[in-house]
Length: 442
Image (tube, rainbow, N blue to C red):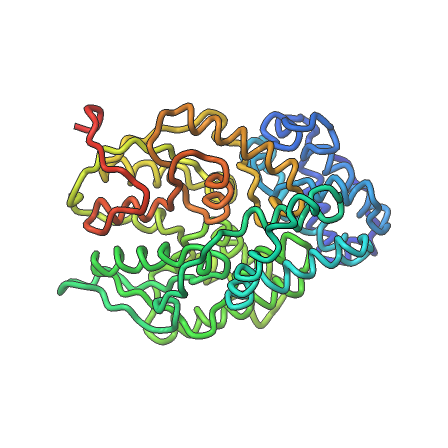
Protein backbone atom coordinates (compact mmCIF):
# COMPACT_ATOMS: atom_id res chain seq x y z
CA UNK A 1 0.00 0.00 0.00
CA UNK A 2 1.39 3.38 -0.98
CA UNK A 3 1.52 5.94 1.81
CA UNK A 4 2.04 9.70 1.85
CA UNK A 5 3.10 10.65 5.36
CA UNK A 6 5.19 13.77 5.80
CA UNK A 7 8.64 13.72 7.39
CA UNK A 8 7.20 15.61 10.35
CA UNK A 9 4.55 12.92 10.83
CA UNK A 10 7.13 10.13 10.57
CA UNK A 11 9.14 11.78 13.35
CA UNK A 12 6.45 10.38 15.68
CA UNK A 13 7.57 6.77 16.34
CA UNK A 14 3.97 5.57 16.64
CA UNK A 15 3.07 7.01 13.25
CA UNK A 16 6.29 5.64 11.76
CA UNK A 17 5.43 2.16 13.02
CA UNK A 18 1.91 2.36 11.61
CA UNK A 19 3.30 3.55 8.27
CA UNK A 20 5.57 0.49 8.10
CA UNK A 21 2.57 -1.74 8.79
CA UNK A 22 0.39 -0.02 6.19
CA UNK A 23 3.03 -0.40 3.48
CA UNK A 24 2.92 -4.18 3.88
CA UNK A 25 -0.75 -4.42 2.95
CA UNK A 26 -1.27 -5.52 -0.67
CA UNK A 27 -5.09 -5.17 -0.77
CA UNK A 28 -5.48 -8.92 -1.41
CA UNK A 29 -8.62 -9.27 0.71
CA UNK A 30 -7.73 -12.69 2.14
CA UNK A 31 -8.48 -11.22 5.57
CA UNK A 32 -12.14 -10.62 4.73
CA UNK A 33 -12.87 -14.35 4.54
CA UNK A 34 -11.82 -14.95 8.15
CA UNK A 35 -12.98 -11.70 9.76
CA UNK A 36 -15.93 -12.40 12.11
CA UNK A 37 -17.50 -8.96 11.69
CA UNK A 38 -17.27 -9.03 7.89
CA UNK A 39 -18.68 -12.56 7.80
CA UNK A 40 -21.52 -11.41 10.08
CA UNK A 41 -22.27 -7.95 8.68
CA UNK A 42 -21.03 -8.11 5.08
CA UNK A 43 -19.73 -4.52 5.15
CA UNK A 44 -16.28 -3.91 3.64
CA UNK A 45 -15.61 -1.25 6.28
CA UNK A 46 -16.15 -3.94 8.93
CA UNK A 47 -13.31 -6.00 7.47
CA UNK A 48 -9.61 -5.60 8.27
CA UNK A 49 -8.94 -4.25 4.77
CA UNK A 50 -11.70 -1.67 5.14
CA UNK A 51 -10.50 -0.61 8.58
CA UNK A 52 -6.95 -0.32 7.29
CA UNK A 53 -8.13 2.17 4.65
CA UNK A 54 -9.98 4.16 7.30
CA UNK A 55 -6.96 4.19 9.64
CA UNK A 56 -4.61 5.16 6.84
CA UNK A 57 -6.83 8.08 5.83
CA UNK A 58 -7.15 9.29 9.41
CA UNK A 59 -3.45 9.07 10.28
CA UNK A 60 -2.12 10.26 6.93
CA UNK A 61 -4.25 13.40 7.04
CA UNK A 62 -3.51 13.96 10.71
CA UNK A 63 -7.15 14.43 11.49
CA UNK A 64 -9.22 13.60 14.57
CA UNK A 65 -11.30 10.44 14.51
CA UNK A 66 -14.89 10.87 13.35
CA UNK A 67 -18.07 8.92 13.96
CA UNK A 68 -17.60 6.66 10.92
CA UNK A 69 -14.15 5.42 11.83
CA UNK A 70 -15.09 5.05 15.50
CA UNK A 71 -18.11 2.94 14.54
CA UNK A 72 -16.07 0.50 12.46
CA UNK A 73 -13.04 0.34 14.76
CA UNK A 74 -15.34 -0.25 17.75
CA UNK A 75 -16.84 -3.22 15.89
CA UNK A 76 -13.40 -4.83 15.55
CA UNK A 77 -12.97 -7.71 18.03
CA UNK A 78 -9.16 -7.65 17.87
CA UNK A 79 -9.47 -11.40 17.33
CA UNK A 80 -6.45 -11.22 14.99
CA UNK A 81 -7.78 -13.89 12.62
CA UNK A 82 -6.71 -11.52 9.86
CA UNK A 83 -3.08 -11.81 10.98
CA UNK A 84 -3.23 -15.59 10.70
CA UNK A 85 -4.65 -15.28 7.18
CA UNK A 86 -2.51 -12.39 5.89
CA UNK A 87 0.17 -13.55 3.40
CA UNK A 88 2.06 -10.24 3.71
CA UNK A 89 2.67 -10.15 7.45
CA UNK A 90 0.57 -7.05 8.18
CA UNK A 91 0.66 -6.48 11.95
CA UNK A 92 -2.96 -5.44 12.25
CA UNK A 93 -2.81 -5.72 16.06
CA UNK A 94 -0.33 -2.87 16.45
CA UNK A 95 -2.10 -0.80 13.81
CA UNK A 96 -5.56 -1.03 15.39
CA UNK A 97 -4.09 -0.44 18.87
CA UNK A 98 -2.58 2.81 17.56
CA UNK A 99 -5.92 3.75 16.00
CA UNK A 100 -7.73 3.15 19.28
CA UNK A 101 -5.28 5.33 21.17
CA UNK A 102 -5.78 8.04 18.54
CA UNK A 103 -9.55 7.74 18.91
CA UNK A 104 -9.29 8.05 22.68
CA UNK A 105 -7.22 11.23 22.30
CA UNK A 106 -9.20 12.95 19.52
CA UNK A 107 -12.84 11.81 19.65
CA UNK A 108 -15.49 12.81 22.18
CA UNK A 109 -17.95 9.97 22.61
CA UNK A 110 -21.58 10.44 23.70
CA UNK A 111 -21.94 10.89 27.46
CA UNK A 112 -23.37 7.46 28.32
CA UNK A 113 -20.75 5.71 26.17
CA UNK A 114 -18.00 7.65 27.97
CA UNK A 115 -19.46 6.75 31.35
CA UNK A 116 -19.77 3.06 30.49
CA UNK A 117 -16.19 2.84 29.23
CA UNK A 118 -14.88 4.76 32.23
CA UNK A 119 -16.78 2.42 34.56
CA UNK A 120 -15.39 -0.69 32.88
CA UNK A 121 -11.84 0.70 33.04
CA UNK A 122 -12.33 1.61 36.71
CA UNK A 123 -13.85 -1.71 37.79
CA UNK A 124 -12.72 -4.71 35.72
CA UNK A 125 -8.93 -4.55 36.21
CA UNK A 126 -9.30 -4.47 40.01
CA UNK A 127 -10.50 -7.71 41.66
CA UNK A 128 -11.93 -6.08 44.80
CA UNK A 129 -13.93 -3.55 42.78
CA UNK A 130 -15.08 -6.20 40.32
CA UNK A 131 -16.19 -8.50 43.12
CA UNK A 132 -18.19 -5.67 44.71
CA UNK A 133 -19.77 -4.80 41.36
CA UNK A 134 -20.87 -8.39 40.79
CA UNK A 135 -22.51 -8.47 44.21
CA UNK A 136 -24.45 -5.32 43.32
CA UNK A 137 -25.52 -6.72 39.94
CA UNK A 138 -28.40 -8.58 41.56
CA UNK A 139 -30.15 -5.31 42.25
CA UNK A 140 -30.06 -4.41 38.55
CA UNK A 141 -31.29 -7.71 37.06
CA UNK A 142 -35.03 -6.89 37.35
CA UNK A 143 -34.43 -3.90 35.06
CA UNK A 144 -32.66 -5.76 32.22
CA UNK A 145 -35.71 -5.58 29.96
CA UNK A 146 -35.98 -1.82 30.45
CA UNK A 147 -32.27 -1.27 29.73
CA UNK A 148 -32.49 -3.33 26.53
CA UNK A 149 -35.22 -1.05 25.12
CA UNK A 150 -32.92 1.97 25.22
CA UNK A 151 -29.96 1.70 22.78
CA UNK A 152 -27.63 3.75 24.98
CA UNK A 153 -28.29 1.44 27.96
CA UNK A 154 -27.91 -1.89 26.15
CA UNK A 155 -24.35 -2.33 27.47
CA UNK A 156 -25.74 -2.28 31.02
CA UNK A 157 -28.24 -5.00 30.11
CA UNK A 158 -25.46 -7.08 28.53
CA UNK A 159 -23.27 -6.64 31.60
CA UNK A 160 -26.08 -7.73 33.93
CA UNK A 161 -26.82 -10.81 31.80
CA UNK A 162 -23.18 -11.85 31.93
CA UNK A 163 -22.85 -11.36 35.69
CA UNK A 164 -23.00 -14.71 37.54
CA UNK A 165 -25.70 -15.19 40.17
CA UNK A 166 -23.03 -16.19 42.69
CA UNK A 167 -19.28 -15.76 42.87
CA UNK A 168 -16.75 -18.00 44.60
CA UNK A 169 -14.74 -16.68 47.55
CA UNK A 170 -11.34 -15.14 46.89
CA UNK A 171 -8.56 -17.70 46.71
CA UNK A 172 -5.83 -17.63 49.36
CA UNK A 173 -3.47 -18.81 46.62
CA UNK A 174 -3.81 -15.41 44.95
CA UNK A 175 -1.87 -13.83 47.80
CA UNK A 176 1.87 -13.26 47.27
CA UNK A 177 3.95 -16.25 48.27
CA UNK A 178 5.80 -19.33 47.09
CA UNK A 179 4.37 -22.81 46.54
CA UNK A 180 7.09 -25.44 46.74
CA UNK A 181 7.33 -28.22 44.20
CA UNK A 182 6.71 -31.72 45.50
CA UNK A 183 9.21 -34.56 45.36
CA UNK A 184 12.96 -34.56 45.56
CA UNK A 185 13.59 -33.43 42.00
CA UNK A 186 12.97 -29.74 41.33
CA UNK A 187 11.71 -29.34 37.75
CA UNK A 188 11.60 -25.58 37.51
CA UNK A 189 10.62 -22.27 39.07
CA UNK A 190 7.87 -20.16 37.57
CA UNK A 191 5.76 -17.12 38.40
CA UNK A 192 2.02 -17.14 37.76
CA UNK A 193 -0.20 -14.25 36.72
CA UNK A 194 -3.11 -14.12 39.15
CA UNK A 195 -4.91 -11.64 36.91
CA UNK A 196 -8.04 -9.58 37.53
CA UNK A 197 -11.41 -10.76 36.16
CA UNK A 198 -10.46 -14.44 36.14
CA UNK A 199 -9.37 -14.37 39.78
CA UNK A 200 -12.91 -13.26 40.67
CA UNK A 201 -15.00 -15.30 38.23
CA UNK A 202 -13.09 -18.58 38.59
CA UNK A 203 -10.19 -18.55 41.08
CA UNK A 204 -10.05 -22.35 40.81
CA UNK A 205 -8.27 -22.01 37.44
CA UNK A 206 -5.09 -20.71 39.06
CA UNK A 207 -5.54 -22.93 42.12
CA UNK A 208 -5.66 -25.95 39.82
CA UNK A 209 -2.65 -24.73 37.85
CA UNK A 210 -0.57 -24.31 41.00
CA UNK A 211 -1.69 -27.72 42.28
CA UNK A 212 -0.74 -29.52 39.07
CA UNK A 213 2.58 -27.73 38.65
CA UNK A 214 3.68 -28.36 42.24
CA UNK A 215 2.74 -32.06 41.91
CA UNK A 216 5.03 -32.13 38.89
CA UNK A 217 7.88 -30.69 40.99
CA UNK A 218 7.65 -27.07 39.82
CA UNK A 219 8.01 -24.23 42.33
CA UNK A 220 5.34 -21.57 41.73
CA UNK A 221 5.79 -17.96 42.82
CA UNK A 222 2.97 -15.42 43.20
CA UNK A 223 4.96 -12.16 43.16
CA UNK A 224 4.23 -9.14 45.33
CA UNK A 225 2.88 -6.16 43.40
CA UNK A 226 1.60 -7.92 40.28
CA UNK A 227 -1.78 -6.85 38.89
CA UNK A 228 -3.94 -6.67 35.78
CA UNK A 229 -1.99 -7.23 32.56
CA UNK A 230 -3.50 -4.07 31.04
CA UNK A 231 -5.30 -5.75 28.13
CA UNK A 232 -8.77 -4.49 29.01
CA UNK A 233 -7.83 -0.81 29.02
CA UNK A 234 -5.31 -1.26 26.19
CA UNK A 235 -8.08 -2.35 23.82
CA UNK A 236 -10.20 0.65 24.83
CA UNK A 237 -7.39 3.03 23.82
CA UNK A 238 -6.37 3.96 27.38
CA UNK A 239 -2.71 3.72 26.52
CA UNK A 240 -1.27 5.42 29.61
CA UNK A 241 -3.19 3.10 31.94
CA UNK A 242 -2.16 0.02 29.92
CA UNK A 243 1.52 1.00 30.03
CA UNK A 244 1.28 1.68 33.78
CA UNK A 245 -0.05 -1.87 34.30
CA UNK A 246 2.71 -3.27 32.11
CA UNK A 247 5.41 -1.44 34.08
CA UNK A 248 3.94 -2.61 37.38
CA UNK A 249 4.04 -6.23 36.26
CA UNK A 250 7.49 -5.95 34.71
CA UNK A 251 8.78 -4.63 38.05
CA UNK A 252 7.09 -7.44 39.99
CA UNK A 253 8.42 -10.19 37.73
CA UNK A 254 11.87 -8.62 37.50
CA UNK A 255 12.12 -8.80 41.29
CA UNK A 256 11.13 -12.47 41.14
CA UNK A 257 13.80 -13.10 38.50
CA UNK A 258 16.44 -11.39 40.61
CA UNK A 259 15.40 -13.25 43.77
CA UNK A 260 15.79 -16.77 42.42
CA UNK A 261 15.33 -16.82 38.68
CA UNK A 262 12.32 -17.83 36.62
CA UNK A 263 11.99 -20.44 33.90
CA UNK A 264 8.69 -18.97 32.78
CA UNK A 265 5.86 -16.62 33.64
CA UNK A 266 2.74 -18.76 33.48
CA UNK A 267 -0.44 -17.28 32.02
CA UNK A 268 -3.77 -19.08 32.34
CA UNK A 269 -5.89 -16.53 30.44
CA UNK A 270 -4.81 -16.40 26.81
CA UNK A 271 -6.07 -12.84 26.37
CA UNK A 272 -3.57 -11.77 29.02
CA UNK A 273 -0.87 -13.88 27.40
CA UNK A 274 -1.16 -12.09 24.07
CA UNK A 275 -0.72 -8.72 25.79
CA UNK A 276 2.14 -9.75 28.09
CA UNK A 277 4.02 -11.27 25.16
CA UNK A 278 3.71 -7.81 23.58
CA UNK A 279 5.15 -5.89 26.55
CA UNK A 280 8.50 -5.68 24.76
CA UNK A 281 6.84 -3.79 21.93
CA UNK A 282 4.56 -1.70 24.14
CA UNK A 283 7.49 -0.44 26.23
CA UNK A 284 10.10 -0.32 23.48
CA UNK A 285 10.32 3.49 23.66
CA UNK A 286 10.85 3.58 27.43
CA UNK A 287 14.60 3.37 28.09
CA UNK A 288 14.03 2.40 31.72
CA UNK A 289 11.81 -0.56 30.79
CA UNK A 290 12.55 -1.64 27.22
CA UNK A 291 15.07 -4.37 28.09
CA UNK A 292 13.19 -5.58 31.18
CA UNK A 293 9.91 -5.73 29.27
CA UNK A 294 11.51 -7.70 26.44
CA UNK A 295 12.85 -10.21 28.99
CA UNK A 296 9.41 -10.58 30.58
CA UNK A 297 7.76 -11.08 27.17
CA UNK A 298 10.27 -13.79 26.32
CA UNK A 299 9.47 -15.63 29.58
CA UNK A 300 5.68 -15.45 29.20
CA UNK A 301 4.13 -18.85 28.46
CA UNK A 302 0.59 -20.10 28.30
CA UNK A 303 0.15 -22.97 30.76
CA UNK A 304 -0.38 -25.46 27.91
CA UNK A 305 2.67 -24.11 26.11
CA UNK A 306 4.73 -24.68 29.26
CA UNK A 307 3.34 -28.16 30.00
CA UNK A 308 4.01 -29.22 26.40
CA UNK A 309 7.72 -28.74 27.08
CA UNK A 310 7.57 -31.36 29.88
CA UNK A 311 8.06 -35.08 29.65
CA UNK A 312 4.78 -35.72 31.43
CA UNK A 313 4.14 -39.05 33.21
CA UNK A 314 1.31 -41.36 32.27
CA UNK A 315 -2.04 -39.99 33.44
CA UNK A 316 -3.45 -41.34 36.69
CA UNK A 317 -6.75 -41.85 34.89
CA UNK A 318 -7.86 -41.67 31.27
CA UNK A 319 -11.43 -40.38 31.42
CA UNK A 320 -12.27 -40.98 27.75
CA UNK A 321 -14.60 -37.99 27.80
CA UNK A 322 -15.37 -36.41 24.42
CA UNK A 323 -14.14 -32.82 24.53
CA UNK A 324 -14.83 -30.01 22.08
CA UNK A 325 -11.72 -27.87 22.12
CA UNK A 326 -12.44 -24.20 21.53
CA UNK A 327 -9.24 -22.38 20.63
CA UNK A 328 -9.53 -18.82 21.91
CA UNK A 329 -8.60 -16.18 19.33
CA UNK A 330 -5.87 -14.87 21.61
CA UNK A 331 -4.49 -18.41 21.76
CA UNK A 332 -4.55 -19.42 18.08
CA UNK A 333 -4.20 -16.02 16.39
CA UNK A 334 -2.55 -13.89 19.05
CA UNK A 335 0.00 -16.42 20.33
CA UNK A 336 -0.02 -18.99 17.50
CA UNK A 337 -0.60 -21.81 20.00
CA UNK A 338 -2.72 -24.40 18.18
CA UNK A 339 -1.22 -27.83 18.65
CA UNK A 340 -0.20 -28.06 22.31
CA UNK A 341 -3.59 -27.92 24.09
CA UNK A 342 -5.09 -30.60 21.85
CA UNK A 343 -2.06 -32.86 22.14
CA UNK A 344 -2.04 -32.53 25.95
CA UNK A 345 -5.73 -33.38 26.17
CA UNK A 346 -5.33 -36.37 23.86
CA UNK A 347 -2.35 -37.69 25.82
CA UNK A 348 -4.38 -37.28 29.01
CA UNK A 349 -7.02 -39.64 27.63
CA UNK A 350 -9.67 -37.29 26.26
CA UNK A 351 -11.25 -37.64 22.85
CA UNK A 352 -10.73 -34.23 21.26
CA UNK A 353 -13.05 -32.86 18.60
CA UNK A 354 -12.68 -29.52 16.87
CA UNK A 355 -15.79 -27.51 15.98
CA UNK A 356 -16.35 -26.19 12.47
CA UNK A 357 -15.29 -22.59 11.86
CA UNK A 358 -12.84 -22.85 14.71
CA UNK A 359 -11.05 -19.74 13.47
CA UNK A 360 -14.08 -17.51 14.15
CA UNK A 361 -14.35 -15.61 17.42
CA UNK A 362 -16.98 -16.53 20.02
CA UNK A 363 -17.73 -12.82 20.49
CA UNK A 364 -16.29 -12.33 23.96
CA UNK A 365 -13.17 -10.27 23.16
CA UNK A 366 -12.61 -8.52 26.49
CA UNK A 367 -15.39 -5.95 26.87
CA UNK A 368 -16.80 -6.52 23.37
CA UNK A 369 -19.71 -8.65 24.62
CA UNK A 370 -20.76 -5.64 26.72
CA UNK A 371 -20.08 -2.77 24.32
CA UNK A 372 -21.14 -4.59 21.11
CA UNK A 373 -23.66 -7.02 22.55
CA UNK A 374 -25.75 -7.63 19.42
CA UNK A 375 -22.84 -8.65 17.19
CA UNK A 376 -21.35 -10.57 20.09
CA UNK A 377 -24.55 -12.58 20.60
CA UNK A 378 -24.67 -13.55 16.91
CA UNK A 379 -21.09 -14.80 17.05
CA UNK A 380 -21.72 -16.62 20.33
CA UNK A 381 -24.76 -18.44 18.98
CA UNK A 382 -22.89 -19.42 15.82
CA UNK A 383 -20.01 -20.74 17.92
CA UNK A 384 -22.32 -22.69 20.25
CA UNK A 385 -24.11 -24.34 17.32
CA UNK A 386 -20.81 -25.54 15.91
CA UNK A 387 -19.65 -26.79 19.31
CA UNK A 388 -22.84 -28.70 20.00
CA UNK A 389 -22.68 -30.29 16.55
CA UNK A 390 -19.52 -32.13 17.63
CA UNK A 391 -21.51 -34.28 20.06
CA UNK A 392 -19.00 -33.50 22.80
CA UNK A 393 -19.79 -33.82 26.49
CA UNK A 394 -17.79 -30.81 27.54
CA UNK A 395 -16.05 -27.75 26.12
CA UNK A 396 -12.42 -27.00 26.95
CA UNK A 397 -10.80 -23.63 26.33
CA UNK A 398 -7.98 -21.50 27.71
CA UNK A 399 -9.55 -18.09 28.27
CA UNK A 400 -11.96 -16.91 30.96
CA UNK A 401 -13.76 -14.57 28.55
CA UNK A 402 -14.57 -17.46 26.21
CA UNK A 403 -15.68 -19.62 29.14
CA UNK A 404 -18.13 -16.95 30.32
CA UNK A 405 -19.37 -16.18 26.81
CA UNK A 406 -19.95 -19.75 25.62
CA UNK A 407 -21.38 -20.95 28.93
CA UNK A 408 -24.09 -18.26 28.68
CA UNK A 409 -25.68 -20.16 25.77
CA UNK A 410 -24.23 -23.68 25.67
CA UNK A 411 -26.10 -26.68 27.08
CA UNK A 412 -22.93 -28.42 28.23
CA UNK A 413 -20.22 -27.51 30.76
CA UNK A 414 -17.41 -25.18 29.68
CA UNK A 415 -14.16 -25.47 31.63
CA UNK A 416 -10.57 -24.37 31.42
CA UNK A 417 -8.26 -26.88 29.74
CA UNK A 418 -6.05 -27.02 32.85
CA UNK A 419 -8.90 -28.42 34.94
CA UNK A 420 -9.25 -31.41 32.63
CA UNK A 421 -5.50 -32.00 32.60
CA UNK A 422 -5.35 -31.77 36.38
CA UNK A 423 -8.18 -34.32 36.63
CA UNK A 424 -6.32 -36.76 34.41
CA UNK A 425 -3.14 -36.33 36.43
CA UNK A 426 -4.66 -36.96 39.84
CA UNK A 427 -6.70 -33.90 40.65
CA UNK A 428 -10.44 -33.67 41.37
CA UNK A 429 -13.08 -34.06 38.68
CA UNK A 430 -14.21 -30.63 37.41
CA UNK A 431 -17.69 -29.62 38.45
CA UNK A 432 -20.37 -30.62 35.95
CA UNK A 433 -18.17 -33.10 34.09
CA UNK A 434 -19.41 -36.66 33.69
CA UNK A 435 -16.85 -39.44 33.54
CA UNK A 436 -17.74 -41.84 30.77
CA UNK A 437 -15.28 -44.15 29.11
CA UNK A 438 -15.88 -44.45 25.39
CA UNK A 439 -14.71 -47.05 22.92
CA UNK A 440 -12.79 -44.35 21.06
CA UNK A 441 -10.63 -43.80 24.10
CA UNK A 442 -9.81 -47.43 24.78
